[in-house]
Structures are given as C-alpha cells and as structure tokens.
Amino acid sequence: MRKTGECEKVLGYCFKRKSLLKEGLTHSSFAYENNLSSNERMEFLGDAIIEVVVSDILYKRYPKAAEGELTEKRASLVNKKYLASLAERLSLGKFLFLGKGEEAQGGRELPSNLADGLEAIIGAIYLDRGLRMARRFIEKQFFPSCHSRNE
Image 1 (cartoon, rainbow, N blue to C red):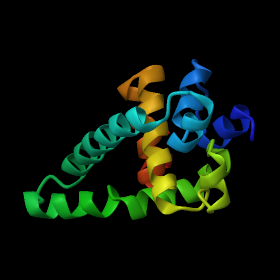
Image 2: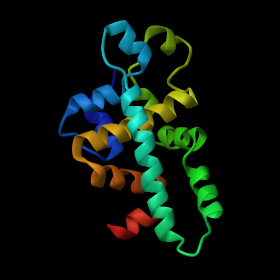
Image 3: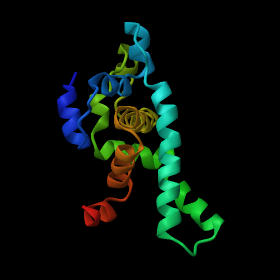
Image 4: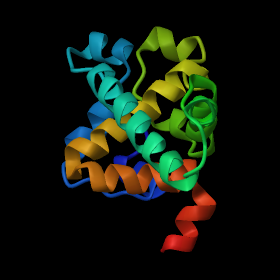
C-alpha cells in the first residue's frame, strides 16, 4: 500500500490528523476484512460539502444566471462521472485500501470507488481543518484555472 505521505503530496494537502486520511481511503471491503471504520460516513459528508461549495462558487460566478442554469452547471460538476475523472487525475485509486475481492475485481479503477473516495477525502479534509480548507481543495480540483489566478 502506498504511503499516506505520497497521497498527501498528490492531493496537495497535508493532514494534521493522518488517521482521517487513512479512514478516507478505506473502502468498506477493506474495513470489513480488517475490523476498521470505512470511508462511507466521510463520503456522505464530503458529498454535502462539495454540493454547498460548488453551488456557492457558481452562484457568485454567474450573478445573472437563473436557478435552472445554475442547477445544470452544478449537475455537470457534481456527479459520479465527473468526480471519478477528478479522482483519476489524482491517481486516487492507487491509494485506496481495498479488500481482497474488491482488489481482484479491479476496484482501483472502478468509477464508483474513485468518486466515493474523492468525496470521502473532501470529508476528511473538512474534519481535519474545516470548511475553509475543504473549499480550497474543491476550488483547486473543480476550478483549477480560477484557483491559480487567486493564489
């Protein structure tokens, strides 16, 4: 298994509490086999944080856009397919802790595992350092051209 330090480097985020990163990377299959907590609760939290942050950014970026247009834009960014593509760009799959069966079935490349893992990582960042840091990470991943101008 890859070291969490390498994962932090790829994410561009250093966890104060490394245990949050480990839990964020722990698929339910690995958790079950090793009597650990899975990343499912963090995934739930991360999903909500992504929704709020992306909605806020779009609301501010498009002040004249109607609700339907904003909803459409958000839906194009906050969905499993797009999240999986972002996770793939980060090579998140190689850092996931997977059970033997999930590993054997190609779970590292499975879009649902990648998307869920990214949501869990965002939840872990939120738990580690709060909404401000989670927002920075989301901006960097979802809106990279804007993020680089703001730094």
